[in-house]
Image (tube, rainbow, N blue to C red; front, side, top):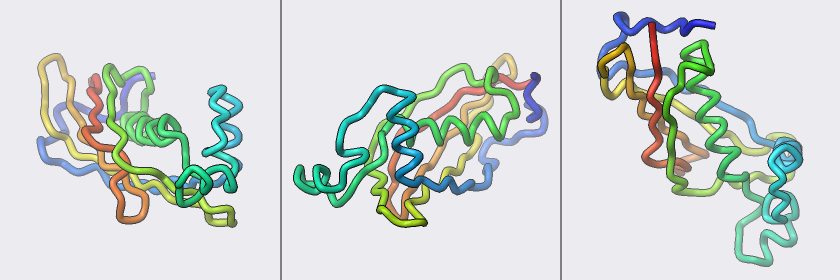
Length: 142
């Protein structure tokens, strides 16, 4: 499927509106099954607090995946993402209630490259904490 965002219609500095992703414990259990990462800090509150965490925390790669989802939903074609990277800067604490946590992801077009590629800078937050830093995607557009 071709990207729905057009290179010629974007400007450097253009913002991509934030999208909020709800994270509940059930999402972490499903992710653990898919990834094979069954570390107890991601599902066992007693263990997580015993090792000094405030509560169960989301997998870093799960959080990164939400940022990737933001980019692919925006561009309209998962195959258009040609490079993607982040650094983990804070935890997403996921309480055991009906609300869970929220990861909010927004973006900005940072640079237009040759061959109709753009660099998108991403901001991912949970509450007031920035949970990803140096988050960038390079996207191939038409």
